Amino acid sequence: MILGASFDTPDENEAFAKAQRFPFDILCDTDRSVGIAFGVAADAKAGYPKRVTFVIGADGRIEQVIEKVDVRSHPSALLESLR
View 1 (spheres, rainbow, N blue to C red):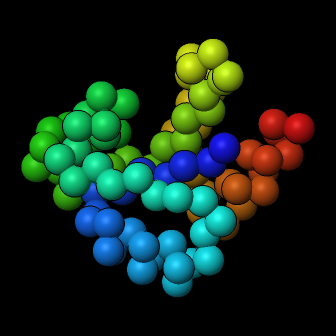
View 2: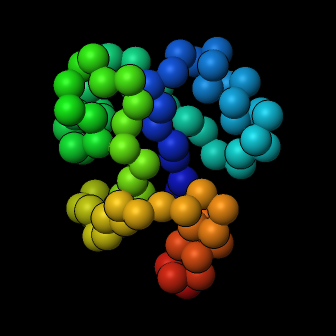
């Protein structure tokens, strides 16, 4: 399963996902609590989160953290590495 997370509102995320033709849902973290918990936002006033990928195993544990993400090549490279 693939999920995204954003500080934007549900309407903003829906419009963005539709425009980008994302085949996955984007979770709304408008209070930044998830971003803070995962270390991608310093505090609740952060304008944007760091762009990080977390690969979470079936047991719920983080298996991999990828901090340098090139939005053009990352999705296909990540899928290939998980095969």
